[in-house]
Amino acid sequence: MSEQQGSPARIPYSVLVVDDVDLDRTLMTGLLARDPLCSVTGTTDGAAALQMLERQPVDLVLTDLLMPNMNGLELVKAVRERFPSIPVLLITGQGSEDIAATALQAGAASYVPKRRLSHTLLETVTRVLNSSRAQHGYGRLLNCMKLCEQNFELQNDLRLVSALVSYVQQGLRSLKFGHDADRVRVGVALEEALVNAYYHGNLEVSSELREENFTAFYDLARERLQQSPYRDRRIFVHSTLSSTELMFEIRDEGRGFDPGILPDPTDPRNIDRPCGRGLLLIRTFMDDVRFNEQGNAITITKRLPPAS
Image 1: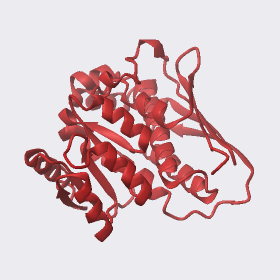
Image 2: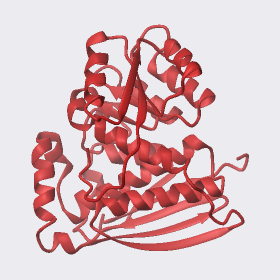
Image 3: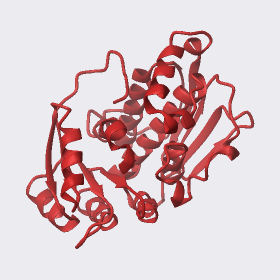
Image 4: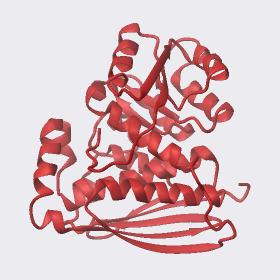
């Protein structure tokens, strides 16, 4: 899981694992069981999962994509329609890239490549649950607000990233901006952009290193948190929220990069790669994504359809 010093107290949560392969389902159940606050149940296909949710809702659904009776894409659509407050996390593997890309478009909250389950499953579950729960917490902001502009200057601290995402989620719920699933996806996109600014921007730790050596990636990040100039850098966030649009500009103090050198995040063949994963989610969940010339700032926009 992400290393967040001084993280707030966590509360128990429940996960439904859906996979027709007994070995894979057992693996995922075992990984989740490492967290003593997690209670896990499992089933073999989407149709059975929906029946279980009718009897006993859970906090999160974790599903494979290629299954009989009802596959993962069909399950995502059904959960969004019948249980819109329950986020769905996808497990992707070779042969499921196209379905995964479509499922993200259809409402899935995030995904974990099957080959990286042991490294990133609990971390991703925590991120999605934080985003989902924030919108169901207290939400007594100014519901008569028509326009709000705010500026934040964050120290290089993942606790502040989580706090800002939670704050935004509460505001969106108070203003009834979009549906529950939309607000979860905005929270996931914002957190991905902030985490990219933290690791890749201010700490200058490349996603290629994470792809090659997961442990070395986080070891280098910890080292640089103790070194100048990395430890002294800030993340600057400008947000504009109205009844029709939500926009964030996130800027770090790193050297920047050329976005054109990243693998195409919209190409399903790249969905199983850690490199560019955050950008794929951001582009999928937001309506407009732009970088500045230096490559150290990203502007992301979500528009609210008039019908909402």
